[in-house]
View 1 (cartoon, rainbow, N blue to C red):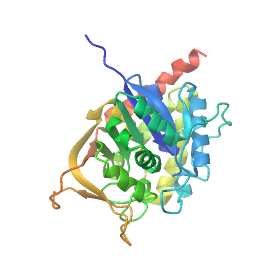
View 2 (spheres, rainbow, N blue to C red; view 1 turned 135 degrees about the vertical axis):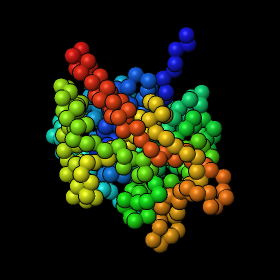
View 3 (cartoon, rainbow, N blue to C red; view 1 turned 30 degrees about the vertical axis):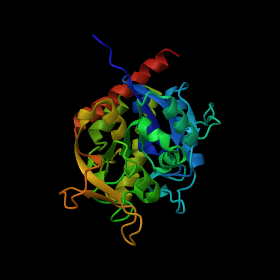
Length: 319
């Protein structure tokens, strides 16, 4: 029987509480080959999101995956961050030492281009923050478009959370999102319709707390802070771990139900800037261009995360 190849991904992120859990899931699942972790300004400034990515790697003992700093500003607009949700550091809550490892010298955009051009067209891009790095890579080297297996995006939806119309990741750099959504590359979108189902319930938190390793303790601490801010800002009893959905889909696409729909990004509307216009009923007559995830298998999703967190127990026992 032929052995299944691992799915290669580049995780482009802005840690971020849910980005941190996404990193742990990607590095802790045996079916994923995490080619690199690239960072972007989003939940916090890029210096902070990069340092946070290094801290996540440190707490989990991830030393063999490169971390590369990317874009610090959106393509056009002024930078916006989300301290009300993620704290000033971008990952408030856990008290972590400064990382011992350092970021690579290569810029994230250059790394993305290089890895794609060297590949056999088997790398999936997984952006869980603003799409600045991905858009810049596409503009700098259009030849990468045919090399991208798929882009699995956390962003957008049929409603907003940063404005009434727009989700945060798309809103803070809608021009970049427009470049990516119009690229012709296969796209799967984990929008708010889907990610608001990925709730870290009390039962989930108890399962994570029962795992005895530093990575799981770190996630427990993340969720305590995240639960507090989501309740205060959005009125959610349990926080949704948006970004983790992208990695879960890469592991097992059956964790979501999706439908191919037309999605366009608004960049000119006074009240609708950053909106993803999801043509649910096909009223535009335009050809569908995005695989839009709409329903999550909650039990399967959290089983994946728990299994990955348990894998770090073995990592620590072997140190």
